[in-house]
Image 1 (tube, rainbow, N blue to C red):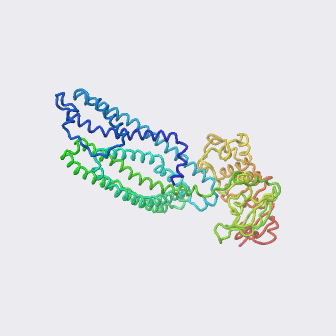
Image 2: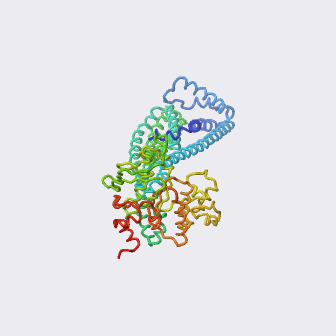
Image 3: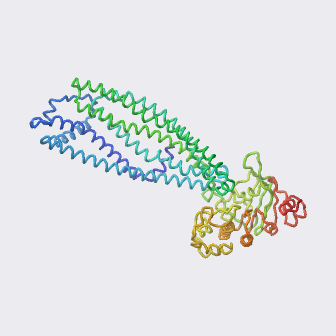
Length: 620
C-alpha cells in the first residue's frame, strides 16, 4: 500500500529532503536543550559561593563524577570531548552571575532556533501533505471519469462521492504528515536513548524491559482500529448516499410529505455510523494512556534505582536529573508514535477503499489502447445481439437490424422492454454479451471509444444540465466553440429568446441541474447542445414530462430541426415523432417483435397497434 502512495509523493522529493533536514535539526536542537540540565544545576548549586575558588572545576572535584554509560566509538568520543571542552570554557568562565547570564542567553538562542526550524517543518509538512492529497484526489476523479457506465449503475452516488472526498482526506494520516511525525519522534526518542545510555546502561535496561510490552499492546490496538476504521468509513459512505438521494430528490420528498420518513432513514444510518465511530475511538483512546502508564512504571523504577546509585556516589545527582528528564521527555514522542499507529491504521482502511476505485478497469478510450478510427458512411448493423446485465437474466435477445445514413429509427415498447439498453449499446456504454454491432462493417469493439463517441450526440430523457452558465452548458465538453456558433445552435433550438432575457444572458449561471429554468427551457438547452455538436448519429430519448402548449410547440420545432438530415435513434413517446420515423422497432421483453413504418405496423395489428391504441385511448 505504501509503495503505491509513494509514487504520489516522489514528485516533491526536493522539498521532502528539505523537510528531512529541518526535522533532523529540530530534533537535535530539542535534545541539546535537554542536555543543558546538568550545566544549569552546576552553575546554580556550585556557583552560590562568592569565593572564586568555587568555580565549576573546583566543584567538580567535590561532586560525584562517575557514570556507568556505554562508551562511545573513538571518533564520536573525541568529538564529544572537544565540544564539551569548548562549551565548559564558555559557560563556566567568570563569576557565577556572568555564567548564569551566558547560560540563559545560550538557552534562549537555542530555543529560538529550534522554533524557527519547527515552524519551517510544520509549513513544509502541510504543503507536501496537501499537494499529495491534491494529486490523489485528481487521480481518483480522473479515473472515475474513465470507468464504464456499468460501475455507476451498480454503485451508489454517495459512496463514490465519499471515497473522493472523505476517504482521500483521511489518507493524510498515511502520507507526509505522519511520515514527518514518525521521523521527528523517532529521532527524539533515539537522542533520548543516547543520553540515557551515556549516563547508565543499568538504568537504561529498566526502560527497555517495558518496551516489548508497549509494542505488543500498540500492535494489538492497531489491528482492531484498522478493522473498526474501515467499517466507520463504510458507514460514512452510506450516510453520504442517503444525503445525496434526499437532497437531489427534495421535490418528491416534499410532495409526498416524506420528511419524517427521510429523517428516520437518515437517523438510522447516522446512528450506525456513530456506533462504529465510537467503537473505533474506544480502541484508539486505549493506546495513549496504556503507553503512558507503562512509561511511568519505567520512570518509577529509575527514580528508585537511580536514587540509590546517587546515594552510593556512583553517578552525579545532575546526571540522574538529566536521565530522569530524558525519560520524561521521551514519553511524549513515544506517546505520539503510539497515536500515529492509530492514525496510520485508520488511513490504511481509507487507502484500501481509494485504491479499490483506482484498481477498477477503465474504458479503453483512445488510441493508446489500440483500435481503429470510427467511420459511418454505409451502415450500422446489429447482428444477432444479446445482452445481460446479470448472467442468466437476458435484457436483449437476438436483436438484428441495420440502419443507413440519414434514417430516423423510432424505438417503442412497454416499460422494461430494453429500449434504453439497446441505444446504450450504440456508443458502447455497454458491450453485447453475444453478437456484434458493426459500423461500416467494423465491430464496435475494434473501434477507439473516443473516436466512436465523437460521431454521436445524445439527448437524454432526463435533461442533464450543470451548475454553470447557459453558454457553457450548450458548449459542454469543449472550450473552443465560437460565440456565434453557440448562439446559432440556441436559435435553432428555440432557446435564444429566453436566454437573452436571463440576468446575464448567455453568461447566466442556471443552477444545479438547471433549476432556475423551466422544464421546456431545460429541454431546449439540451437540444441546443446536441445541435452545436452536429453529430452524424443522434440518440434521442424523448422526455415524457408534460409541458404547456407553447413550450411543447417550441420543443417540438427544435426536435424537428435536430433530427433533420442525420441518422437518429429515438426512444419515442410523441405520436408525431413515431409517424415521421423511417422505421419503427418494436421491443417486447427484450425481443424485437416488429419492424416497419407507422402505417405498416398499424395494419399488421400486432404489438405496436396495441400500444398505439392504449396510448391514445382507443381501447375500452
